[in-house]
Length: 66
Image (tube, rainbow, N blue to C red; front, side):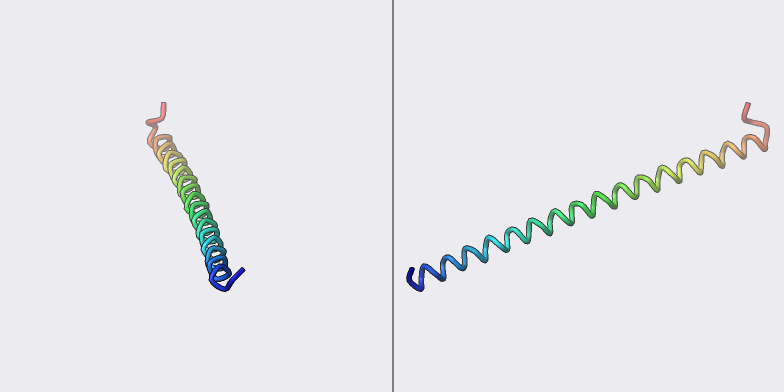
């Protein structure tokens, strides 16, 4: 293999490695974003449940929960 082919081969290898690294980083970012969305959804559900509990307690106190 001459020097030109060797350089071309190495450049191709470097490009492939860079593409793989980019793909891994995108996958990691996607997983992180999904995890954040899941956490936010869970937090929202917890807040909604607490608000409903507070509303029910207020209705019980005021005698409106019949």
